[in-house]
Image 1: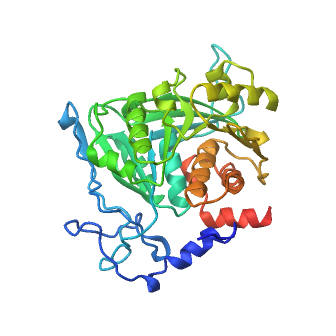
Image 2: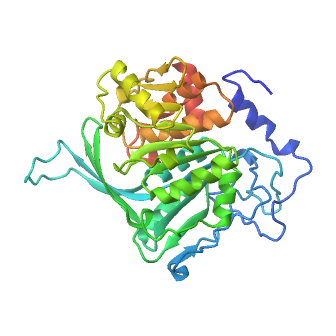
Image 3: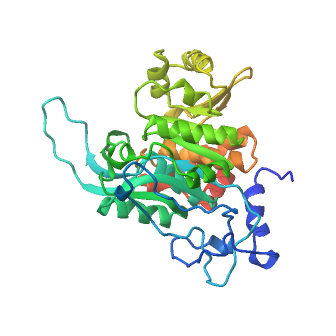
Length: 396
């Protein structure tokens, strides 16, 4: 059903009211559903888990190294409240989860120099976890497939995902690798430099993903990938999604190694920032004409749509054979921290796209979400609520 641009998301909340629920059932009669403070349904909305069992079976070459979290997703606030059988196909994010170690500095140290940081703290992050929490906080049913270590940082990330409304039935704890880490050097103007230690994001993945993990991918409305996990994992996920007719957005952030064409051929939208685009194509991206020329090379690699994040210059969506769509930034009142802004933009674009918005509306919705993100310190803590995005769009 066609809806007006600004009413679409709001009317969904009314449609999903518990008062209108009829013919309800739990997706798995043998599975017990327990309410949690983190995973209860906002405003009594009900999300679908489909008819598939969605527990990670932990199969790999060393089964004892993996532990599956027995968490029920999207459980009702009330133990006797059932789950909608018919609902939206979820956003599925397969990717990284890091403990971000923040240090606030006035400037980056020079070679051989030691400087003092103003403050330091550890927050949950990682491109995959960031994007998943963004989807959850935008009130869209979101699953996260990833790995953390059997350590305090793993617990920190798990709690952050749950608090963000993300289903973590497919988040696996591995005992043979620590949780991934990132050192975020945050400067006073909000810009940052980041160093990543892969940890569990890059280690202990099974050679073949479980049937349950791939089945939730096949059941998705859209899939988000990044390059902070092994390419062979992304390729399996992308192939499963493509064969099921599910669009895939690949965020270029992460490894700076060449992207396998086997992966790119399965991607609907490729999303680099201008720096990543320059690195991948080995072409300059200093102005829009140069960016357009670099995008042409992406077409040659097998991608038909390229969503370029341009920082202070906004964003642009290039589609082969069409004129590019440009979206300026929606100015933030104050820039505190740009960490996670690109992940917020990508995830918000994906949510709007799977909700049926036009490409122009997707770009504007994503720009508003990113504008709110940079006004808060930290990646996951800065992910905006849907209502805040609506309010900004109405006032901008």
